[in-house]
Length: 115
Length: 111
Image (cartoon, rainbow over all chains, first blue to last red; front, side):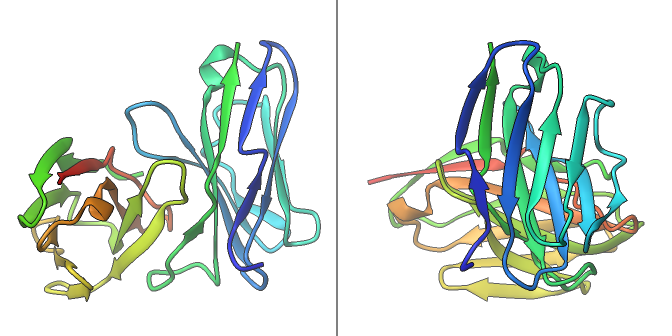
């Protein structure tokens, strides 16, 4: 596609529920990143995919968070047993490859609200 | 993950005036410096990726400089326009290949 697409744009869920957030990166971009922005802070790294594999998941806050990219394109971030503290804007970005010279293209994010 | 500071947190600029703001980061363990512009309800938009000490990049009325030895970057907006209103995020790329974002500088241009 022309840009990075994230769905849904907004998600309101009850505490304890399971949610899935989807990211459709730019075609041909091998690197895919998930970030989370909480109010008043900059985006924080969650996980990085190179192709189909999660090359670095060190930013995932706990084992309630999981992400997949089974065919090396679309990625899904999954959150189990959501908590109010999970409320944030979840951003996805892709880049042609990983390295100092590559800029990221971001989606417009999914605003998750846990009530 | 690098510790990144952006200042000021917010600023108000009269239309037509020029402004600048700062991004500070650790000067070691650094590969590149990214700047993004994030308008409300839109995607963060890449402005610049800079890698070399002394780099200066320009995009229209917006320009940025990079000092890797002392660990800072300035972003300048010349002749501010209402469409420049946005949050400007800087993010150094560390040697772990992760971007560490500052909290941003929110610019509001008053007509």
